Image 1 (cartoon, helix red, strand yellow):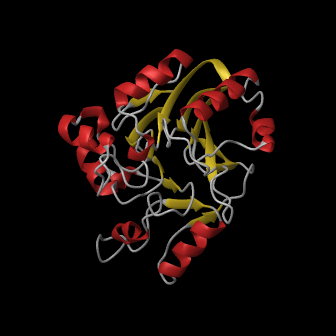
Image 2: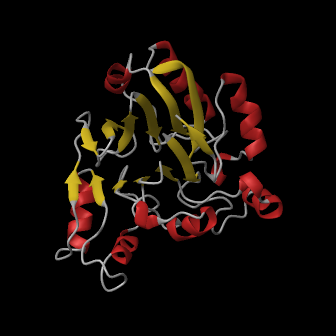
Length: 268
């Protein structure tokens, strides 16, 4: 599988939309890998993860043809991951097609929001349940429960094709015991994991800082959830985490974790 990280920023991106913090100022001045749009990914040009408000700019920047997508998997309903208004542009009168050409997969709340917004529109919508695998074309996708919101079962995804497995884990919080138990021995070949809070320590449990990210990856390696040679990349970085890209490199690479950036692509 070929994975493209289309965006690696948190909800307000980097530089943050109205941010006057150190990291936002640095990103405005220096650009490059410090510019982060809202988190999203693309697998083999056909399987899209999340559809946020930066989708159009990401498609333009990376030369992506969205008509090739056969599915969009939503992790959860936060607006930086689910931009409801973007869905309509895949159907008449914006294009000739009278139905959405890709299948949408999401949790109960995601599906409810889409049905409410488009009650009469022809959309193939499949509701996901945690730990229950669905098959989409050549892919087996298993939702894993994230510790992100108390009122919603937010999902991370194990995506498998031809015996190769990716765990896409944004907005994870620190996993509960049941998740570590489920992942143990899965022999995952690549991990994309959030590190939203960077150097910032907060009481909010729905995101991870650098220390928590390192601990989570370490536990996944010890339990053989991760293959011994698994690649690990980060995503969903927030300006409030007070870490530039190079500072993330210095903090994370000693632990075999590579800070992701917009446009990073890798093979699984």
